[in-house]
Length: 363
Figure 1 (spheres, rainbow, N blue to C red):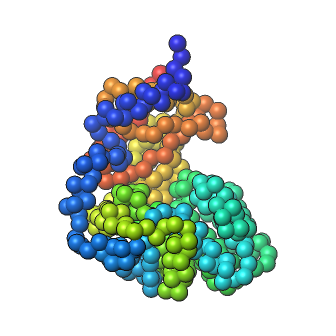
Figure 2 (cartoon, rainbow, N blue to C red):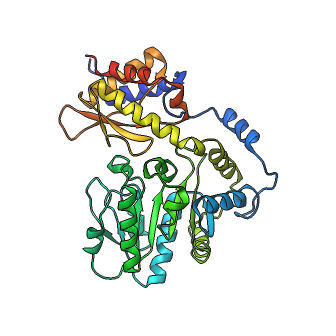
Figure 3 (tube, rainbow, N blue to C red):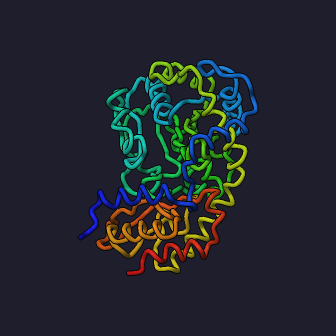
């Protein structure tokens, strides 16, 4: 009897729970994670509605890292970005914002910019690459803001070159429109761009960063920018229900990630490049080639259904989790998956990862 998708999902869940080794990060038991947070705590003061304690300390650290006058910690990046774009729209007296057609703002947020804030979306491009200045110039009229997602996750974690980023930022400045950076993975972008976080952030009016991805925080985001903009964003945080009574567990875990993982971004990026080369030698394709960050797409010359079965069978046999579910690629008979290099990945040898992936291509 053929394996159904529901059957495979059940098997994958059971196998994942039984794993003893993970190529990327995995969820720790609740008690273990809470104990880690106890050990990471450096401030006994508890924030109240975002004031004081680890939350205030985190906001100062992020503002310093990004070279901005102020920063605000928020429960989610969705709320952070909606808030700052609404501030720009109210200030500019126009509801038009320029966004990439593959950005998180459009693909993963249930049309919130239009439904909640009545903002009008001008798409810079829908191509799986970063937008160009000529595409911005092709949008006539007044804009409240322009956004760039660095890296653009749904295009394959792609970045512009530093020179391309500078030229695009200059185009926004010449037009007199604020540039906002969706930097959910900005931490991971500096090795490729070969410039510091502050140098990247200096090209934009405001920057959003996330803490729960490769940094390993529980959740949460920060928005950095001018003091007056951040003050208005705090008001939208309250209006959207994000000014919760206390956020200290999230702030503690975010600060832990800044201390322990952020310094390793160069190491994670170099390992991603090494893995991309090793996987190509096993018959896979990668995109981008070479990767722009610690994350990239792996393409396999095998249909998604077949390689998914192989990956679950391997997980059951070895108690090793090496990949997420595979997705059909545009080319018939091919499939793809995202590979995210985390500190856990560094515990694996490069040839060991390549061999493990290579087993998924065996008939």
